[in-house]
Image (cartoon, rainbow, N blue to C red; front, side, top):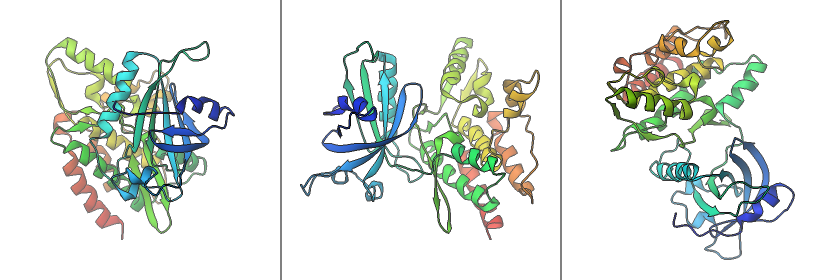
Length: 343
């Protein structure tokens, strides 16, 4: 990886009461608290500890001043790596993250991978540490749970402004010389920061599933391989139809993300994917609901969202990928809706 790394073996003790500081390359951090965890990953709030040297600190190595934290706090993701396949996935996430530079895509500020000796308590062979800006207001999913409990909804204007920012981030990915698809656009991967007097700031994160967007499928075996990959990397309620049932001859492109984007717009409005209702129905099938684009529109809020917004969602949720719009078309349309409904 080309990274020097020291002092991170103490992180396990730090989180579990050890109290030692953490060194990422030449920069020192103190673990403040744990923010979340997954199957093999933990996210911590950390605070940078600066030395007396004027050239020290993370700020001296960051390309963009906007990435520097005002109070020295950052988010650090620790990944426990148990085999070579997991190691390669983390390395690919780091490589892909370095390709992007956009205010609505979460930047990777620093990273390193170290080898560790497995013990009775620890079965993993490597630990990866990824450092990001921190956004303490949580994700769209976190906010949706809170708002649903309170029976609150975003205004039409805020829905459109949040969505516009996601479009901007995805457009950056989709229009690289080698277009990339995110492959897991969903509320749980959108960080939200509330701002007084302004729409919420929305930032797309987690590029662990991002891959070159365009893929030719020319056999049944290739189609089944793509479906298997998608079942592991693309969240089911937001997964495009062509990734559920891929033809033996197909040209897959970045419009898989456009489907997920349409589902996410619906979720900004109503708190869930447009197809999750199928999970609660007797004999219901999420896959069939998605492949047939069977959208159900809930009641609320009062007054309800404009028909133009529902039509916008339906436009993106076309089961035939060949007639689904591209991100440039979506940006043009959302700007028109913002001009109309954000007066």
